[in-house]
Image (cartoon, rainbow, N blue to C red; front, side, top):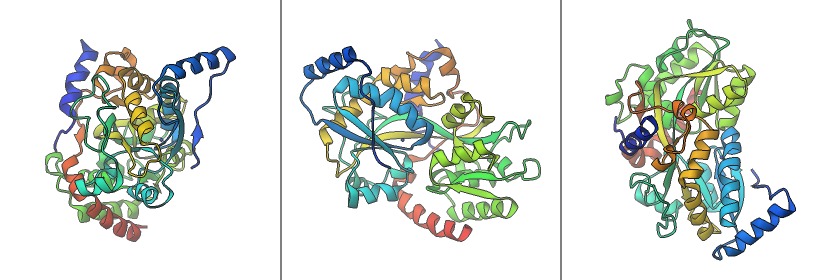
Length: 368
């Protein structure tokens, strides 16, 4: 499997060892703070006054509000309104074709297409504005900027299993690990690779994906136990918290956040599927200048370090942020020597996403 993005991350991580209706970010609490913010805003260059940012919701949305949206609102003088979506390509296309309410959107591989497909959805990033110090060439793509790396992992309730399910095949072992499974229905980007790995496909033989084999493996799981499918990541985590599901798939950072809140959740990193989440500006953005200013702010090292500290497990895409992390935060991240980590083939997904998504939607309808 191709290790895209990993070289830049590997070099940077060595420094450590030597996302509904938009909700406005809160205003300053005191009169003195308000006056200071007004004076600061007056000193900034004139720009569009607002930007609507859309992310994946849930606890990570809450973290972005604290660490990124509020900080960038104060720094730039641009009012940041935020909302959430399910990371689906359909939601992005609907915004461009219809509502046109979003300016900036967080996208994972499910929103990254061929050159022609990207041009239909996104504005090219203006790197005369988004000239953030520390960003690597790998992170700076034509239509988006990577800001964090995170992984889909085997998650489980630690109060149900003392022997952690290891690897994707363990999810299919319903004798040793009985109970309902939690999986993601909005994109095949993680589900098909996980199913194929569970079926014994070697990591270096994973791409191009055998989609039919992956769907058959998922059908097998649904014949063994109850599977709860989620489109929204927040709903998925709620299913774990309530005990509706006891094992399945989840983003590593969301599991860590839930555990920090006292929930009996844990994950096994063997087989973690690592991918990038990126900032993009929709082609129909009403505030494109403000959108670029926001992305410049949000990719700063200090902002990314704050994000990684608040939402442990996320890996900043700006290597300079890694220098600012404490040892506890750094310890929650995978390193170049962490065994069992897998990497998405981004070139494959860009060329094949829509075709795989079409087959996934057809197959998923039959699975349900």
